[in-house]
Image (tube, rainbow, N blue to C red):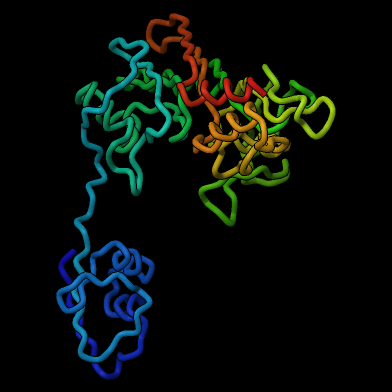
Length: 335
């Protein structure tokens, strides 16, 4: 987009800066203009000016220089991959927390797809769509663990069919607040996008047409801090295993939150701190210190099992949680 220059006349004096500029061009919304201003793309009389609320004055001259539009086609990038298995048809890897799987607005680079294009070359182009070549399933940015990617159309189709019919084994390790009662069970609640926040998912009733089937099996593996819990038989936190029949967006995070046991560190569905923990003795203070540095949902894709889409061989992969997850369980284990 070309550089835009505006000069304020007497009639425009007193108008809010971002609104006035957006009124001068049909190509930019007010929200977009505000973001550009706050991002340093606007200059007033030759100097960067970053106050979108400013009441403009007659005689001022503004120059807006929008950044170049990012290419939506993912480009290969040399990003290290932890490869667990690879052949001519697929690649299985251990995704670290913090890595976005596929490009999207605001994340056109530095993703797993960019890394795969570099690692696999042109063989991935055209599989599964421009922005998601070879991606059959995904893990949230801050979820770590094992996932598989197809390297050709036949493998992509075969894996997709297994995901559609739920003929796969998927087990996750998670740390949740409290202790589920009963300690093992099945959560069967449909999920849908939250109407007031499109980044979040929410549980909806079975009569809601927008709801998609979601089934999560959980069991408690270990309880932490039972002696510190407010209620007998409860715990400060629990290590749980979740096995999925379906793979909806944020499924484990939403389902566990719905039954009152959100995942530790979850920024969307969790809660701050750990109930029952009060600083004052060494184990509690150590746990709180580790928790304070844990800024993601405590969720790790530990097991993935499926049939090789070409050879028919049964494949199963298991990964241990990353260090931050292990440090948290160790700190909680001392309670």
